[in-house]
Image (tube, rainbow, N blue to C red):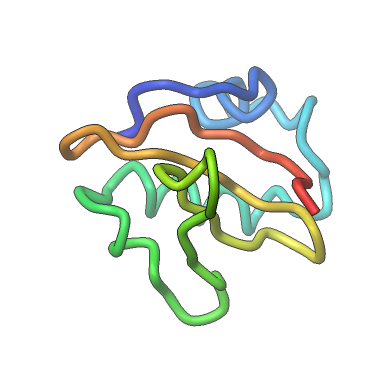
Length: 92
């Protein structure tokens, strides 16, 4: 279950369906990813074909990433069975 967001626009989209703050052309894909993340109980549940799931390195080694588009990523951490610090970012 998603417990905490870092990206306000992403949280508004997830909770209220408000598309402001996220790329409109990626809204459907982001919605599917958030629904899957909300149902996930461990990071590996996001390891689906086309998501390019991976763990980040260095000081962000506790963070996981899935690809939304080109350089845009949905990043998150897990504490127990809960997704935390869910963010939409371009870290490349």
